[in-house]
Length: 433
Image (cartoon, rainbow, N blue to C red; front, side, top):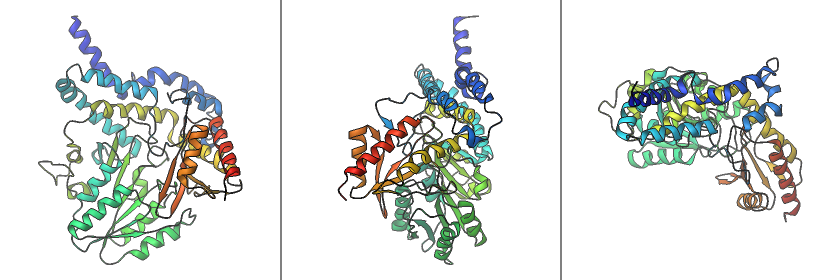
């Protein structure tokens, strides 16, 4: 066998990567994780969520900086080492001959990736488009739907700003009517939320925009109930799943929505700059492409992937992130991250001057929790946490929300959260309210 032939076969095997038994995850983690899981096979996911021996194995898979405590995973999450290594390997291969390895080799990996994402999402592969983030996915739908002057869209003031801006631009340019509800979170009443949307509907309402998990404070919205109510009135629903996908154990069809967009670089821990769009199959042909396509009204979901030159290494690294996620288990992961949120939040909620802005009812929250201290702005609290304790969070001031957002992930340790609790207590004791 020639040396060139050996190199080619080695590279071909690498391309199978995340989609076969030789994935990096299987090479590095599968045996250890399977061994660790055997100890807990008779336990519920909620019980495993509290076992530090199991999660220590998971924590060691990340390369987070030990000099800071990163509790802003709601913005973007780090990838585990196997995902980083996959991206690096694909990037090195691409640079050996970009136009060949990118367009003729790596590009062929999108169909196996589509199938892998569809399996995770519980959908048909032909309903999934791979792109760069939730903003791109949701803007594709927002700008792609045929809405005419006077047609109404209902969203909320607590939706993500890029989505709000997209609707406002359509209102400015085309005369659609964009209406916003406003909620005082936390809310522990599905019917209150559903009724607010229902009461805002008029004969001109064509579309509802619903954020599955409110990014500011982590409120989980009753999406399925909202969708069922809307569909009974002939109204479609877009769901922003940026913070729920890869975190909560659900399948997209369970939501009963028509359109769904998400980022994969949040709780799925996929490479930074990866996202996914889902459209119910029978609705694909009526959505115009955001970027040009020679058949913009075809029923092929791939028409939404005409991005030009893209990062194929990032795209293919998603597969290893899915392997990592499935190695943990969706429900087990959800239970662990909720346990971490409750661990710190339940300890600070009774500290004088401290206020939580998120429900601790598991039906209404999971990872994200907002916290504030009387007499301090979110910026001041965020600054104090980082400058004095090297705890990285994010201050939120948006509409009627004023809090610091705290978001752990599977790599977060209990000692790190103990430091957070201690820090909040000390900061609150010194505040001048």
